[in-house]
Image (cartoon, rainbow, N blue to C red; front, side, top):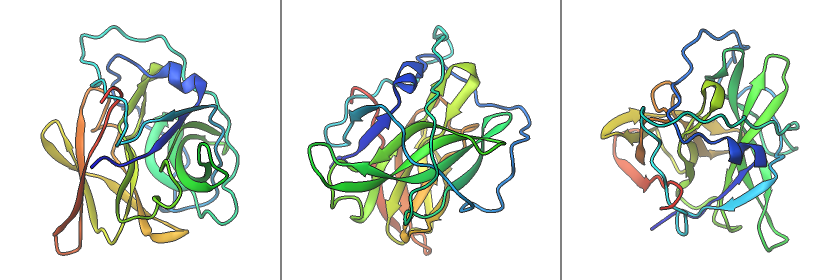
Length: 242
């Protein structure tokens, strides 16, 4: 069964997704180092385009391109973000470079349900500069209110490559008592980094190292395990066109 999700992408970000391979950023970073995975303030959404890409009605994936693809000249998104709304918890520092002088952060955001007055929550991924300025790339959330806290995986999004060597990590969230989350990447198991959502510790936000899970790899599925190593859940990762 596919997981439903809404994916909000800025208009600039939509144009910026590469059809070519983008290598992970390997330059040494001098962005501000987080003190933990759940530190400090964050930002709220400013995405201008909405794509309903359910894992039940998800539009199909195009596998990330191979090294023979023609590089894109698309520009990266420039959507500004604002601090985290009250009651939604803290921003999560991933510790991963967005650029050599900025870091990928994940922040909880309020999300409007399409065709409804109801709202839910989602998680945005932003490029955080050394001066604290945020540029929003993507927001993931459930499509319907009431589904967002059901046990299991939610809104798992694959990696995106942008021009300028920017690689946005694959990420999502899991509801339940997970001790470890892994992904199947080109047939090999890769462990995700995780952080509990400070507003609800039953929610685990996870992401993959963007120097290992890059735009020329293929994340097929994710799995969650308890402290004893028992698998709790498994979910397929869907791509555009799938």
